[in-house]
Image (cartoon, rainbow, N blue to C red; front, side):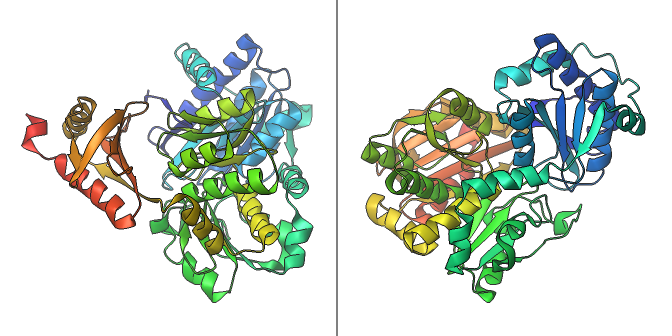
Length: 472
């Protein structure tokens, strides 16, 4: 039996290797037992799925296992964004299940769990499922899908429309339409296909807007290197903004009217300013350990609390359901805002920033420049360095021992060990070294006042991995 391990956002594995019908059967059983034993909900589960290979079939198989164990199932009648399942979990007071590998390469699939409050299951909840998984002996025979439909224990529903209705009530759709601006949308062949166009009509132009289980040969992760053609698309269609979503639409990247990539750090800072200064909302700013320090300056300037969590949106979701949070986000494109779900939602965030452009009567590039004028330039760079396991561990140990005291000629003045090792440099820039828990990969992040400086910090740190002083 293949090892089944939940990561920062559910269980993911390569299809036909770790991600098999038998292993999905076991994970579903464990989730069902956890629901029943812990009395998580009496309203069953809501199941959604993405555009990946066999996702619909995997979703049906999971539904059959839940049904045979006496747990009622509502399943989407088509592929659907992950935040739509978070909405449905809250709406029906049920547990949400999403068959998706999010932004992973096309050979992967996965299993996300959404709590009845409408956001990612907490680390404690995931641990409860993992504990049940150790007691599962093997796969069981599920109730046939057709029989489940006939008896009513399985119901097939349109879950997409209710989610889009929620967004339509939360965003000033009419004002955006009246502005006449054009929006470019790149769903990256994933579940966001048609969503923004359905809400905004002909003012939206789409690319990569058909189902492709191979995602055009590129992992559906909205990062700059995967969106090389998108800036040209935005410029060619004379759009005011470009919105790109990952495979299950909970993450976002943006392109401004000049074709410049706008990362999640800038988006989160823009949202904090817009919601507090323009909409007069309050609450803490919560960010993960690898997210921009511009937010630290904004929080101090606005008189708001700043909360920093380990990396993983589940930590942000946990704060959002327990505390008064204005915005929350992580550097990998997962952002959330007050007044919506306690969940990252790439479609909602894209339209909220579009609303910001219309309400402020300023272009996206102007809004970003205003941030730099107020708080100084903040430029970010990240590399996922694939290396040998022994080198990964040696470099991590070297950093934890505070032995990396100078990076690219910049003196390290302090260290932070919240999640990996963050090196704070004398000029205010920083570099984070964090090891993957499942792969021979070192994630190296940096932020500085110039992009070239951030790149130099990362590249210099990468060169240390093969240094004999570290490996001895």
